[in-house]
Image 1: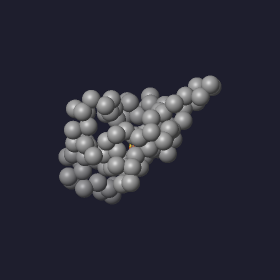
Image 2: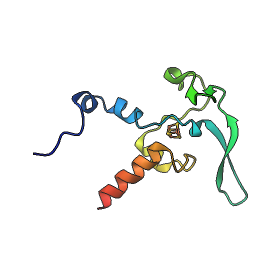
Image 3: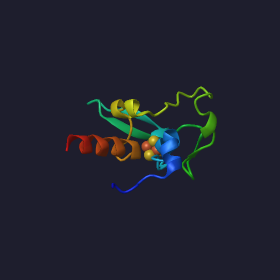
Length: 103
Ligand code: SF4
């Protein structure tokens, strides 16, 4: 019998499980700019709702309602979002999941 690796509440709440992947580094909350070669760089300009000291969003539970262009990260968005940092927990999760599927 395979080992149980998830608790029952996690299995019943995939959204919570997805959101817990985020390590709250706040890197995605800084504006990005492209250089002459089209490579994206992270600026020092943070979203006005980011607490830069704690790296937490001040309006997290209503972030999609405040009209600041906050993007809901889904697996599909993460796969296509070149603006997410390579060390974003979601990017690593999707890369690891994809690599696992290839094996
Ligand atoms: S960059 Fe990724 S891990 Fe960091 S806060 Fe944004 S979504 Fe979370």
